[in-house]
Image 1 (cartoon, rainbow, N blue to C red):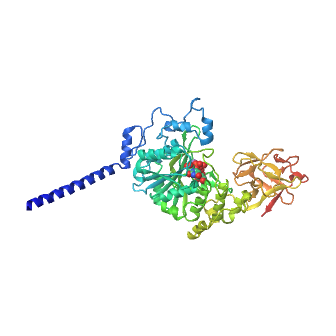
Image 2 (image 1 turned 30 degrees about the horizontal axis):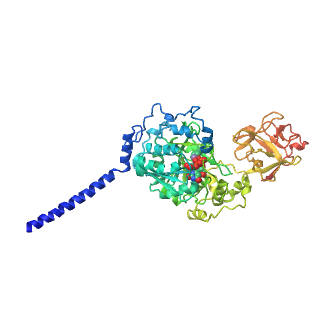
Image 3 (image 1 turned 90 degrees about the vertical axis):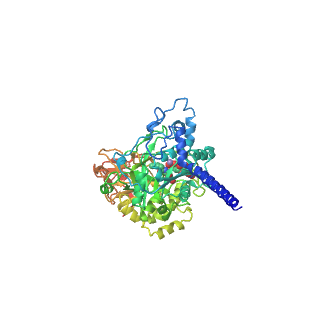
Length: 569
Ligand code: LR7
Ligand code: MN
């Protein structure tokens, strides 16, 4: 009886042990199906699938595959049959993109020296966030593959794809299935509850992220070799630095991957658009190595990394900005003014497809189509103090328009005791020309006899355009705003009037260089505007509305040579 009971008890014990063992075994199997396992399965299925998450080596280019090593793809006549229609919709060559492997090789566009830099092993981890609205399958997945292939696995916490209410079926379940199968849990797809626009969508993805660092990217990029480490190393060193990789160019027509050549410098116009400038000597001189990150006043907006906690500490993005535009300058000004820095990283390269249009509608509800205008109002009203006048000088149509509630954004400025915009101009971007400060005269330049004002005639000032005249617009046209600077330039925000030593010659507007043929004097009494180099006078005699101003021999009796500025200092 006694033995029997022990025997029975033993039986129970064996049975329990068996069950526990079984549970453990099942769990072990489950764990093995982690995403890293899935990558390996994937690798087995297709040896060309270039993921090697453990050793992380740049994959061999696929011999004979289209677009390999970042080469251009040219379509046959047959293939390009529907190209025009596709281009109208997508603004890039989707057919070429679809022909290229999702994990194609690209040239290493870093400066020599970058690849031999040793970064610390224990860097912060990154959550990479790609937002998309109607982006297409191949560029989105090529973005994802490029990130996975070219990031050390232990530093890549996750890739978060934020679908901002795309209309395309391919981005719904098919994308989910593909990502689950090929990338496992490292790629997460979030769907915004309503169309947020790219700015709030970035916030949405960022709030979900768990990595130490968040990296925002557009969903049509290719990350290049070693792109992540220099960014993370700098953030580890300085968590209040917001970093931008060097942006390479992926051609929208051929998908060719080109290095960007040279170092960029982010600046802005008073109409609050981002533009590229060149690094001032003052900045170059301070650099120890040309491979080190260097400060930039502003960023383009699409590609950036920040310490996650710091990013939200200084206010994330303005959720009330709509669809597109303005957030890049807002974040730039705010970061600098509130004690952080914005830096470009020469050793980190990411390619971006530059498209001449957008595959989504740009109409916000509040900005009524002019989303950039309204978003920029919000940024000017919060961050630019009295300098917002220069924005409204360009956008008189916006004066008095509603820009929503900015009180919570102003609170950030209070809470962080941020510097003012003048501090930003003086310390971060002292080269910026301020149209109405430290100048001899500014505003419209009027010839009373003809009621003409000097005018750019609305031409694109990025090209060397010629100075014209047009009926004075009473201060309502930014095309008629000129300054006579303290250094004798007759200029606009970026371009200066340059004259030639020839009677009857026209005046061109070119990039300001300080050279002698860009110097002018103005005698308020006589009204003459004299080109210093040639001694000739600005003349509008016999010139009709919309035509070009000329240089002529100075003659104080000629009404066509009398000019007055709207404001004198
Ligand atoms: O409503 C939208 N919701 C979105 O999720 C509209 C767009 N998006 C997505 C879109 O699918 C894309 O992935 O947002 C991303 C950016 O949109 P793009 O690629 O149409 O914009 P862009 O490249 O013309 O825009 C630049 O300026 C924008 C201003 O708001 C943003 O800052 C973009 O991120 C920015 N892109 C770059 O700076 C890339 C480098 C360009 C340079 C130089
Ligand atoms: Mn883009």
